Image 1 (cartoon, rainbow, N blue to C red):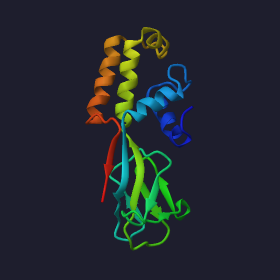
Image 2: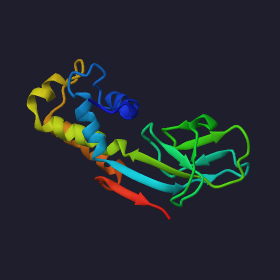
Image 3: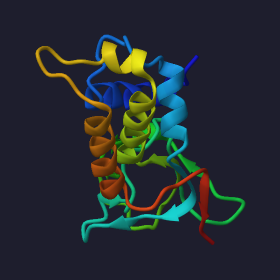
Length: 168
């Protein structure tokens, strides 16, 4: 069963690969494709605006179990998530009041274009699923599916497989 913290990403991916009815991929399959393109961020220093209210990461598409810390050191204190609002797509954290301190993030970031490319490649290799994936009067050939995959590979940049990025 798919992790609860990643369900929003699975639903987002379903929309991107035109499988809203879950007729082609199970949640576990989509989770596996997402996990193939995951970066684990450990104590990533966040940037902030001049008011010290908005903090942001260079990474987005975050799993929902993200956490903020007041230090990159071992004895750091976790900031309660009730103190801020998070935008998982953008990787931003907004506080109501000025914080005047640095924060660090533990999170998992997903390359959605890499996961879309995986889905399209798998679909191109499986004739039964490809037939079930036709969209209305539009029919996609093996070549079309591979072209869609190539397009998303180009957008995805480097291919990530369980990269761990540690700061400090």
